[in-house]
Image (tube, rainbow, N blue to C red; front, side, top):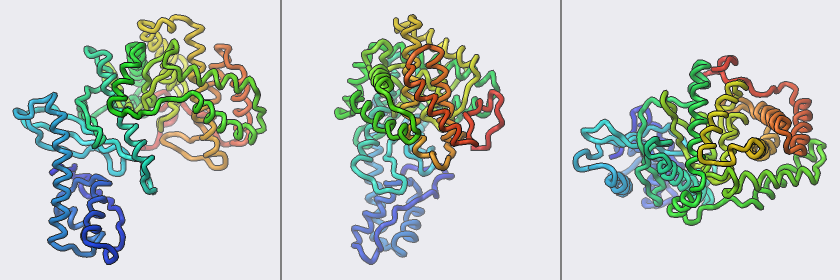
Length: 469
């Protein structure tokens, strides 16, 4: 029987089935099983029966209990067999058999994560299962497809990245996975991990700067060694998910324009032909896998998606990996971590130093990185894309009432990203129409959101300490 940590063993969140008197025994048992599997509550058998009895039926017979346990055991056995099959390719499971599978993810999290331990061995493996985003809504086929797409990208990204520098790995080792059960198995790097986020929120300035430099060095190696190997990544991805969707430039352009035009109209900002031309140029440049900076990109290199060690840093969570301009990843620190809860600013001098380390890694295998004009045009285009991807929808969400996500408000993020793009565009003398648009947006929003300010420096660099998260 798969076990949970004691701290999680009582976190049962049962699915609410129809009233017992209105359904048959089989339907009631199936409902309980759906509840169990939906939330993956691997609790003790007696505890599950007690919960089922109290919440669902107000009483359960021995026959029902046996049916439930028989079903759950068969499901667990099938899953265990798939785990065993994948791990047997890498481990001698006769000498060191699996002795425990322990839940380590928090209840209610989208992904389910277990630690698999082996008898007579200090090594362990992480089991990660991708699950649909549910919230309070009923799951649809589209939700299931999105979960499978994320899973396939995660597995493909982990497997591909592990090939890039086998002697100096950039991510945990991948031990395979299973498409039907949507799980991937990977090296366990230990129970107490430190991330870039830990350094930024709780560390010293020197520790945070060192972590930032390792972070951008790792991204530089990832992009440089992956440059020219995009087809290899796509082969891995399509082997797992033959229907994996790829970026469509026309769809991206249509989506961006349909979000931006009404926003500019509400802000009384004219939408010009030059703006549209620059938007199309930006989208085509950053989404072109054959471009001068084309690479496999992580897609979500936020501070908590890396494990940091004094000697190096490792990337994790490739669920949003794609192909396009490497600078989309590289500009994450400059653009205040566009997809992350841990959004803040870095000191200019320290960020410049870390970005120089990134560029130095990139120049080793990407010729265009040695050309200042080509590099900084691509850099500014990536910054512009982060504005186009996040700002219109963020403004729509918090136009009237702000909200906090993670350590900062959405409005502060919007103001900072507009401000930063304006600075970058002006510094490198590029994208004048989009710079004008961003300037007008910033002026309008600053006047409307009088109490909102741009993001602060991360606490490690001197801003006020953050509350416990």
